[in-house]
Amino acid sequence: MTEAILSVQGVSKRFGGFTALSDISIDFHRDRLTSIIGPNGAGKSTFFNVLSGAFPPSEGKVHYNGRDITGVAQHRFAHMGIAKSFQITNLFPLLSAHENVRIAAQAMQTRFNIWTPRSRFRELDEKADALLELVGLWDKRHETAGNLAHGAQRSLEIAVALACEPQLLLLDEPTAGMSPEEAREMMDLILKLHAERGIILVEHRMKLVMGISNRIVVLHHGQLLAEGTPEEIRTHEEVRRVYLGQTV
Amino acid sequence: MSSKAERNALDVDRTGEQRQVRMPALIDLIARHRVLAAIVFLMVLPWATPYEALAINILIFGLYAIGFNLIFGYAGMLSFGHAAFFGLGAYGCGIPIAKFGFPWFVALPLGVAVAGLAAAIIGWLAIRARGIYFAMVTLALSQIVYYVVFQWVSLTGGEDGLRGVAVNSIDIFGLRLNMLDPMTKYYAILVIVAVALWLFSRILNSPFGGVLEAIRENEKRAAACGYDIKGTRWLAFLLSGLFSGLAGALYAMHLSVVPIETLHYFNSAIVVMMALLGGMGTFFGPFLGALVYLLLEDIITVITVHWQLFVGALFVFLILFFPRGIWGSLLHWMKQ
Image (cartoon, each protein chain N blue to C red):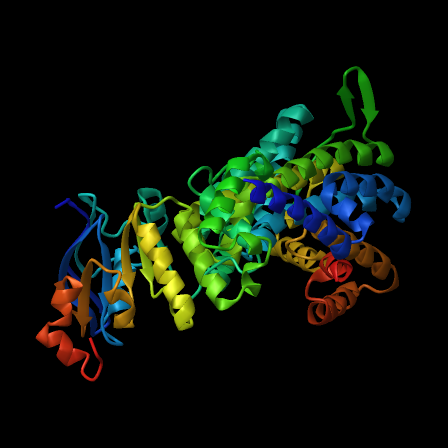
């Protein structure tokens, strides 16, 4: 067993008087595809935001490769090798698909260069094209991101996240709003991406992730309800009760 | 591999075709050589204005508006304190000349440096706030600058302004330019403004220019990509202050006095109007805005002292019906 890439210890998050997460401790591993599931309001998104650095936890620590990253500024996450895609599509809507990925890739190379023309950075263009090809958007690369179809925007979101060459990819409901066909393609893509990096996936629909995950984490009312292999989760009494009426 | 080559060939076709459809050739040419186009325009300008001093004002306030536009149009933050940088640029250039007898080529960079220092400090404090709060913080801090300069009579002349910023001639490579001749003065200042425009265009084309665009489009995503939002905004504010400071320094040399009004918040407000009139977020729009504003002021003051009423009415009309501004609307209309 490898050492944990991301380790969460005793994490809680409160918003005013409301406790969204309470005392969660989990280790995530690089060679695993871990899915975080749970019914609506289970605290999945809050947990995702803590993991991806959108806001710090109220209590507890987050370690990345053994280093304490609790409260580290959002923009440092990409440089450390943690990328995320958003639940609600979050792109640069007026820029082309190509420019979306190119600007994301640029962050790893130069950020405060006010002198060299952008056109000199040919390798960034090539990298953007390669990533667009990977997610199947090469032929749409000149289209304005805001004009792309929903499914294509979700794929572009992944390409933008990949541009910082992450070791760990965090995906918040990547299939939200997708047709079953598109969702299946997305899952295939995620599986492919997993070959080279750790992936943590937040998903509302349990069935989608059962087939591709090595590890499942179930949240319920802001607490860790269960953690284990898909098989263990499938037969877990509590989980069955929470997802009552759904075939697990 | 062959499929990629094929795609590339297709791609060339497509962009060529797009370009034809998107923009008429002339506009496309201007867009691609925007600095050159702006300089050509400015070379002709003094022949079209009622008198040369007005053309010089347009040149200087145009540069001021362009500098302001970096933080307003490109970074998307409304600063209401840019008079501080214009004014400090003017005093920073004027005081060494008037009080210490420095040559202009030392005083001018000094003015820019003073403005830059102020922008670095004010920017560092202000970027912590956002939206209307950002505007208020910049206004408050620029007012502090105003009162310090106002009170420091021995150095700045206080309410009477700074007198005796005499730059009567400029010697370059044995060539003596008579700065008392308005036409000579115009073209001498134009050389400096042209260099500034080139630098500005270079910044917009740089990776940093791309980051500004990205942050304006989607701040959250830009941060997730690894861009330091505050750092980027601070640098944009600093650069914006440097350009505004250069405009102020040139203004001191142009007028040979520095009025305290350069630091007044009214001067912060007119640059917002100029940028909006011309088109925020466009390269040349703010310059055009400065031109329209100053021309209107000049023409209408002859008829009535209430010229601001008419400029205000035009401003409201443009904001309501042409929110992209004059140049912005023109570009948009041409692209259709």
